[in-house]
Image 1: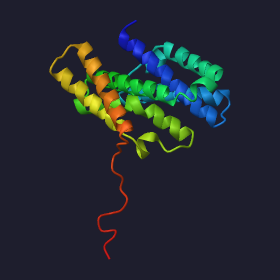
Image 2: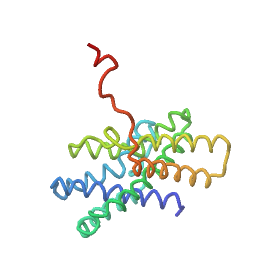
Image 3: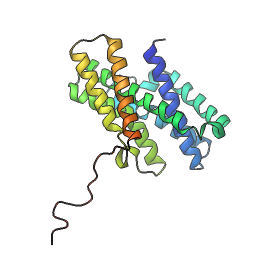
Length: 208
């Protein structure tokens, strides 16, 4: 089992736990919790594969994703009182997850022959769309639309990967530097409360 595959499974587990916790807070039944955990964990990769017409779709071609999600749901039910307060731990896992999925999605796009910019978009889709689907299904405004540097960190990481790939750096260097880039940008953004500007009014809104 490769390191990158291991990180992918860890990221899937972390996303599934976060989805299960949110569904549990919303008082969903067991079936609802499983569905939300599933969508959060593999929704981004599934949407990417559908968009680029790649088959088999990630979780269909590898049942380890399904088992990982089920284990994550069981883990959440058994240890909810212990892990729910660990927001910093879950935040770190989530950040590692989006970093890994950004890299995997971008690389998959390139291998599929997509234009580099579209490959970067596929990397971002892989990383964030599971969370978007989770928030929509639980009737919340998706995180990437309201606060924090989230999708932008993935875009930055994707373009770093493209640059390293273009200059033919070793694959391990591409993986490590891309992952660290997303993690560092995300941590800095949260620590210093950096956000993208919001449109509060039009330029002439206050002109009388």
